[in-house]
Image (tube, rainbow, N blue to C red; front, side):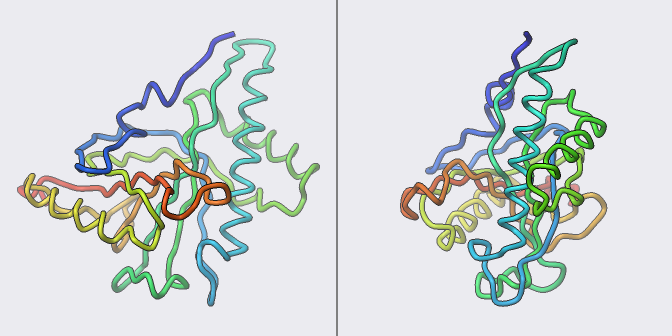
Length: 221
């Protein structure tokens, strides 16, 4: 059986320093993804829509892993990658005090051999086991994030702005400016988080989250 180590393959994308930002060039990645918006009066931690989406993502990701591992031909085993999310607002400033305006895409990187046919089969399997999950909104997408600045944030999510500010200063020093377009859509204050810690088992002060922001060379902005 063939084994794939995606974390090793994309090591530069899933390791980061908490002291110094770094520039990374993210290749085209295959993602299992689901989109949504935080409900009025909720936060990511209390949003039923976001929590349901995360459950559906993990359910599908592990189902796809075992389907791949148990194939009669070309069986491939791999570890499920960390949960990630992109956060943005459609207009105005991204404000921590207004989470009900936040839109999100929750996602998990997939190996390249995972297909839409496999996802459809996984969806049928999961619906039979857990009909309450939002399986109909799951999809496979290819994302070309490209040039980015990233850094490890250690601590509660609410203190991320300080790390983001440090990343912005670093980008400016490197002659880079922020880029807010993804899939032809303007995303104001596009903000990418990669969750290396489980908030259910880790204290807020010890949470580890890689922050990533797309950038472009100032001369081509």
